[in-house]
Image 1 (tube, helix red, strand yellow):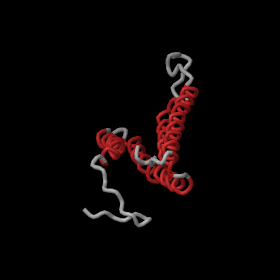
Image 2 (tube, helix red, strand yellow):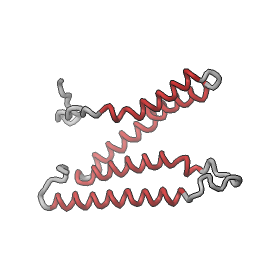
Image 3 (cartoon, helix red, strand yellow):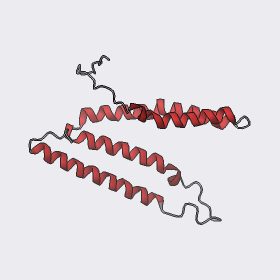
Image 4 (cartoon, one colour):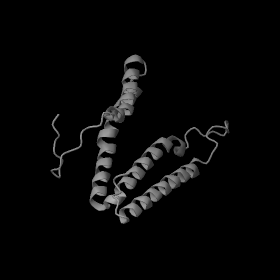
Length: 155
């Protein structure tokens, strides 16, 4: 297998044997939509909309935002800060996407007080604070190691 050079001219690392695991959630989501599209004859339109929005939303919205954020971090952030920032931003995005149904308030009903009974905005803020506190601690460890002469990338 030949290794293609990157934009900087350095050879790209060999692909991980676990690379397929990164594709699995998207394949499952799109597969679910296609399965529903093929098996639910009376309700094909909602499944077609789901598949189209999943593909368009990823390719035209999420992927360009992720690429732009990664490019910007590569240009602006010092090397010792890049990994914690990338993990923190990725974790924030995943948390906000997962919390969107709860934060939107859909499903709250006066008739059913047990439906979404908690203050989900506060809980999401607490989770974000914990995530970024861990990222700050990780950054402090990396900065401390880099000042002692050990490379921070060897964690």
